[in-house]
Amino acid sequence: MSQQQWTAVDTYFSDVLIGEDPVLAAALAAADAAGLPQIAVAPNQGKMLHLLALTQGARRVLEVGTLGGYSAIWLARALPADGRLITLEIDPTHAEVATANLKHAGFAEIAEVRLGRAADTLAQLAAEGAEPFDFVFIDADKPGNPVYFEWALKLSRPGTVIVVDNVVRSGAVADPDSTDPSVLGVRRLHELLAAEPRVSATSVQTVGVKGYDGFTLIRVGS
Image (cartoon, rainbow, N blue to C red; front, side, top):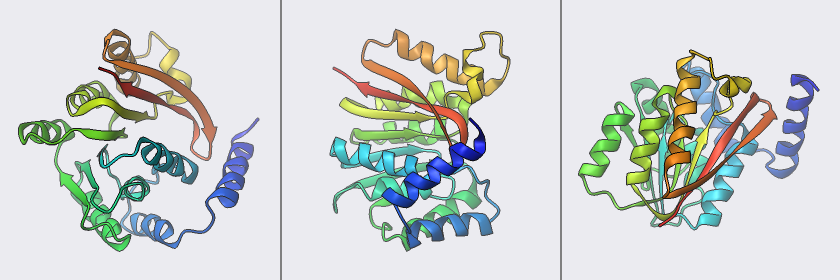
C-alpha cells in the first residue's frame, strides 16, 4: 500500500459521496491565497464530522482550531437555523480568512470565530456561563490537547460527543520513549481519558489523502 493509493481511494469516495462543492472549494482557495498551511481536514473527514454532529442532533458546536474555516463550514451545515457554532483560533490571519469563509457560506449569523489562545478563550467561555455544547471538535496544537479536553469536558453535558483529530502521529503515539511534544500531548490526553470515569472513548487509525493518522471519539456520560 502507498500514499498514492490511499489518496486515490479518498478521492474516489469524495467524488462519489460528496462531489463538487463550490462553497468548500472557495474556502480552500481563499485559505491557499492567504498562505495558510494546507492542513484542513480531508473532504470525507469533513463529511464525517458533519454526519456525527447531525446524528447527535447538535444545536451548539465548539471547535478548537479554526484554520481557514473549512471544517467549521461542515459543522455549521449540521446545525438548525437557531444553532450556534463557536470556533477558536489563535492566528489573526487564520481568523480573518475563516470569518470571511463562514460569511460566504451563509453562516455569519450562527458562527463566531474567537481570536486568542484556546486555553484563554475556553476559560472565557466557562466564565461567561456558556450553555453546554453538544459536539466538540478539537484540532489545534497537539501539546495543548490535555488542556483542551479538560475544558471541553467542563463545557459539555451528558451525551456530548468530542472528537480529537491527529492522534496517531504516523504511529509515533505508540512510542513510550518519544520526546516529541505533539506525541506527548496526545499520549497525555489518552491517559486522562483512561482515568476519567465520566467519559467513554476509542481511537481509530486512518489512512488517506492526509497520510497515516487517526482520531479519538469520546462520549461524555453522567
